[in-house]
Amino acid sequence: MGGGSRPSDHLPPELADEAETSSTSSSISDYHPDDSPLSVSSGITESITDTSEEESAAGDSRRWCKAYFDVLRSYRNSDERAGVLRDAKDLILRHKPGDWIEEVGGTTAGDYEVPDAITLLLVGPRGSGKSTLVNRITRVFDDDFSAPDRAQVSHNLSATGGTCFLQEYMIPRKSKSLCVYDTRSLSTNLPHNFRLLQRWMTRGVSHGEMVIRDSDDFVTRKNIKSMRRQGLLSPCKRRIVNFVIFVVDGLSVLKSMDAKDDQYNEILFETFNYPFLSFKDNKPAVVVTHGDELSLSERAIIRTRLGELLGIPPIKQIFDIPGTSEFDTELAIVDMLRYSIEHADRNLAFNQSYLFEGQRIFHWIMERLQDYDVILEVVIISLCIIILCLRGIENLI
Image (cartoon, rainbow, N blue to C red):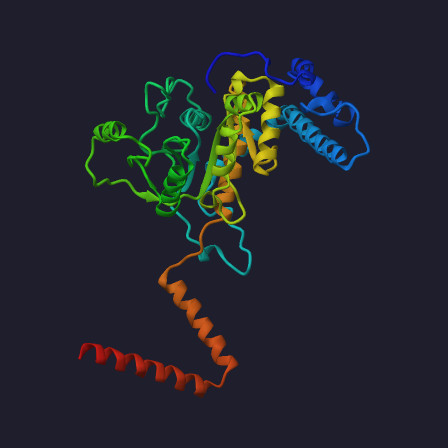
């Protein structure tokens, strides 16, 4: 997100010509991975020898090319989905927590802990565009383009600390079913990031909560504390995170590829795969920002690269926010929220109330009694109770 435009000077030479023609849907439809040279990915040799190593490299290149062109063609399909966009928005607006629970394994909706509101946590490196994403989501569902921005966007991160307090945003503004949490950016210190993420994912998040990293110096800590205008006690409700949206700056990914500096991508890889951000086998959704500063070909390269790096499907789980077209931006945001909410419902925790737990224990005892002689079980249980009582009396004496 952001503003301005930039040339495709960092693209591989073999993709430079394609980048100029890929901005129209007609040219995209003409692309086919079998028609393109293997040199789409930099470093691919023009001729393949009989060695197994080169054959493996050629196979990887073909897969990369196919994924790249599949992503490129997916942008063309946006016009075909114009008719279903409003229905998709209405579906999200009507959604209530738990509506998309899949009653599998003999469970029912009553077996899950259904929250008052689905909570989506935005996580991302410094300058990834989390606050801007909040504003774009708000505009999509409020339909009020004249309304002021809700989230404060930092245009000069060297002069400001960015977001220093957890911020809850209901989507739309008067909704009680869906909220998005803007968080403080991640640092380059992975262990410190992990401790922060683990706290959010295990203890929950609360609006207005101060965020201080272990790596913050004395001055930074003092400044953040001085910005707090309320006492330690907050009336805001603590919410359990139901799903994570990983926000990535597309420009930084591309620059990291161009400079062959893997530091930024390494931070993405390690953080994305941090176990506490996943819900069983479901990893976070990924949002690529700053699309208005990238060409269509560059955006396709970034999604393909991220899909390869993170091990997720680039079309279905990586959402590119173009920023230049209101329709395409709205479509990408609706797709991203639908994906996130549906996975949040599917991965709601089981109800751990005492009643449910007592019922589970009762069924376990009954199964055990059916397997063994009832009298023997009763005798053993009675002896255990007597022993525990005698030990308790002994301790009191």
